[in-house]
Image 1 (cartoon, rainbow, N blue to C red):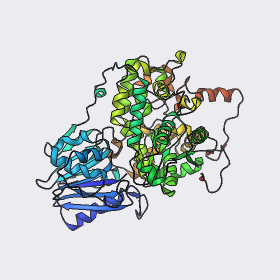
Image 2 (cartoon, rainbow, N blue to C red):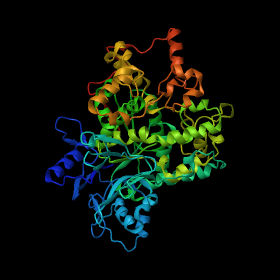
Image 3 (cartoon, rainbow, N blue to C red):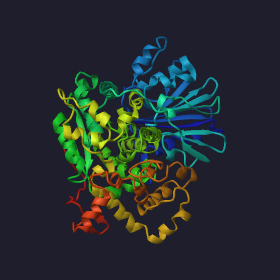
Image 4 (cartoon, rainbow, N blue to C red):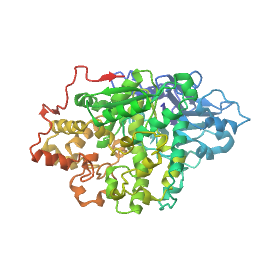
Length: 599
């Protein structure tokens, strides 16, 4: 995953401005330090193009055509310039539709400038992939900016006092130089000719009308397999993230089944590598190990301690650019794992984000009152993914020069899954329909099983829970040592927007505001009441939830097998809770090195 930065229509075209743009492009790709010396999003190449008062900068993570695909990219006469972050999976098909064009590189992103030449601004919907790009037409100094359908790649837009428009993959490319900046909406295009945004992504489900297509397990299975197979496009070593839950296990199973015979297998071998992270003896580690053994992957298991995670929190918040509690909880182990994966020489991983939003997989969906509300909730969750799981998956991995691909968020697959009559997605324990039953059933193949039955029907674990329950408990205990009751009493005055409701949230907010003190930055983060990752609307599905607001899956009282209410009951019955030593719950013996690798 690369990083882009563009300054368009700047009144200053001096050498000093060029140096400033290059400095900013490096900053958004650097680990926080006094010297900003460690680049992460694009460690393989830096490129900068200037035309008058417009600048396009690119920091490259080379995945496709590493030898010649450096950016910015151009059309034949170099009148059209593009800087792109992402992957275009159907680029070979698109090249065939452009027979009169000459391509300079084998990069998948090389098609964009030529598509613009052929179709003007209306080509974006032809792209199948994840992407953010800025295209400058030097013939009339016009430009367009576009972001992929769901917002898998991050993108922000800002405005300078001189009338310039700024585009960046990260907030930190804008926050010092723009008067105002905000999240660039997914599925949208900005055109300088019209002077505004318009939505290019208009799927049938977006209006939230209730669909009625009957459930066909084979149609759903085939759509997902196609989504995974197209993401095997790579010229570098890759693997899969495997938590042992349903989604990542299906990604691994389909990848392992179809890897043989691909170009990737010929280059890097037909045995798939899988990666998992967790506290010692966590639910995810055990389940992932079993899935890896079943699939025959080369499995890499990374351990971290609660203290390792707490020590990384400031770096995580700087990179992820949020103060949302559940995002930070889940980003931290992923951030630690990404560093280890990159150290092994891997540059791309396939991951399972998006399934819970599409199929109503979070545990709070057990309380959905009817199919209409369930469907509307899934639509709202998909539309908000760019602020939560997409942001986490992209930025936690890009922090270390690692790219994450997410087949559940394939446009064609979403269309198939969201067209299913939502009655099939309703959770009906009496009929054996647990969360995501339609997905589980689609891969329940008796003759050629994809996964062991108990893995296929394992209860949902949110990533921040699955890595080890003491992780969240440890974060809360740590935050309580740094945020006093008196600080909480004044929270609404200190932070009137998205006022933190817990000490943990207050702790994260303090760190975020230190890195990003601008009002635009705090407004870029979503807020509102949530239970087990729900929207504020879904909190109303159960009256008891309003008194137990927490994004952890264990807050879904009466649903999660290890819900907080059961822990409380155990404590009252005399079961000893985790012992608190200092500020952290001590759940295991930890070596001095903290993080260990077992391959």
